Image (cartoon, rainbow, N blue to C red; front, top):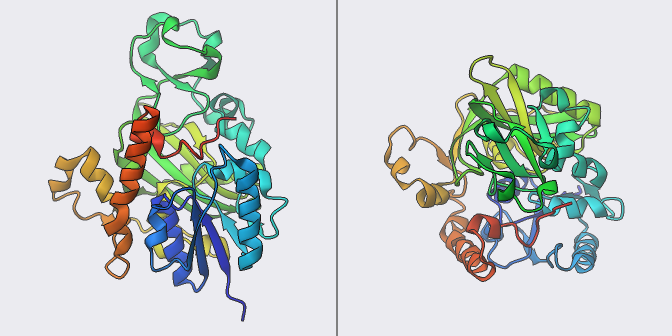
Length: 361
């Protein structure tokens, strides 16, 4: 009987570790890859092999040839990217001799660019009023808008609820202004097989790393959002992992999609051991109603006081497992790697985590 071999890229990400454990539990051979040797998932007992690969940003041709070699040498059946190397894998999806869980690059570009996403025929009815900064004129009411680069991640450079002037923005053609919606934010992670949604996790990011990635996740069930996402993905014939950020207006209860990440996000943790089923079976996967997960080492860095609250201590750690403890013990090495990169490149640690794999159109 053939044993499935899965290559998971972006091994630095906790979601890559989640995928590795889930596929291993399902009997697959798991290979993980990343550009640096201290990547979190490499330490897991669920991983058969770790491969260091070139940065797609700085050496795309070498990245492409290395990926092809890994697939051929190890008989890889599926490639599942997790971080922004997703865009570079998308460019290779027709040349790799295996299944690649990623959409074509033109579709990814259209939904990743925050301006073209706001105009996308599948999503635009659900997006708040959005204009390019070059066409923005309401400078007396900038507190009512969110300003963000067309290509960005983790809300690292977003300007929210502040008085600003046009002179505050260099390269204004690379920015958008979006009407600010006040309400409850939820995030969506979903998996798609050629237009069929096989999994969805909707969650509230109770705590964040700065303004960006959620590090304490509460499962939410909302049939309206599920229906909206299913309709959008079906109309696009989406394939791979699709994530959205949504705000539910506090006054009207209307959900607004504020941006899209066509890659994996933290919501995958809420699916736990069932995550691999979204890629391998016809079973539709959702998280349990009361699921709560936290990235505890990130909580210790950004919200140490919150760790003392009894209400928060019931969340499962996404990294630590008693039977697979090494990733939790070694995660400090990855943190040191990105701290050093941030110091060398004069950027935040959060920005350093994607600097060698990010895609900006």
